[in-house]
Length: 411
Image (cartoon, rainbow, N blue to C red):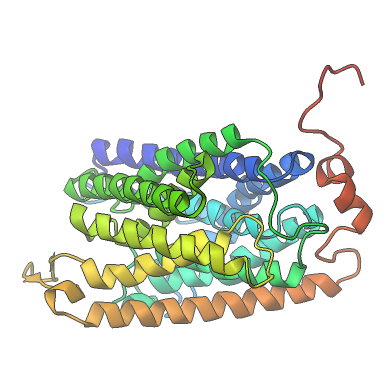
């Protein structure tokens, strides 16, 4: 029978993770030009619809069914055989599936910041179905299913540094390169609504406590520690970004602090259940510096990753996954014996396993994303990019028939 406290906490954590996707919508929506705010936000909101349906019909079954090392099976199609009854004081399979659904929703939404202001909305809907099915679902099985091959080599990803952030970050840079740069944009654009960015950051930060502290699946001391280190990494990373920005420009911006905090959150995600506060400081500091440096480097490449998805989420997730192998604290093995697991304790096995996992997932996500987008681009009636006139007028009015802001409502 389920423990009521664990059930209550995991229902709350699931809702917190879902809230992150609207938070992402505001974060991204504020960063683009006003003529594309609805289009950019709709990328996130429609993911809530599409991926929820996909997850119930076949996504969860393929991700967590007992199919083998690389993919699940069809035992749970349509949530068949997914019980709402818990066992051994934990949570039920259905509640676990609900929690995992929220991760599946936000992952492809993260990618959209790379091709914002120029990607076809109808093609994006098709992309959601295909990418989640052929990229996100298999990677989830590899890392988090008990019989997944990455789980089998001993790699650890507590809350999605590999599954969510590295996967989406690599897909983002591939997508940005394939879609091409925005018209008339050479060095980015000024965010049209900084309060939206700050609101989105607050919602993401708040929701991230469910993302990380919920990933132990219990209301226990691991959840408490994960909560603390999540906040710690975000806080120090935001402050470090402000220092770096001040050294470069003599000013500190709201967008800068927000971006740094998100980088810190992405960095701590894979390690949240395995490190202590001091490890979180190190992970947040290095994660912020690495993401800031990646933003500067990307500006020199000519690849228009519009909202710096790769620099913040890709680099953050990859660093955090490697850092897990460095800073992971002692853990009990199957016999209850405490084992040193991190490089800081002189152990290399976890670090090596996580490096292999990151390389494999990055390669898989990059290649499959390229193939998927290439196919979508040549299918008649789809294609990746809107025409020049639509892009110049703005996607809100040309694709959605709406404007984000109407001065007096008279016209």
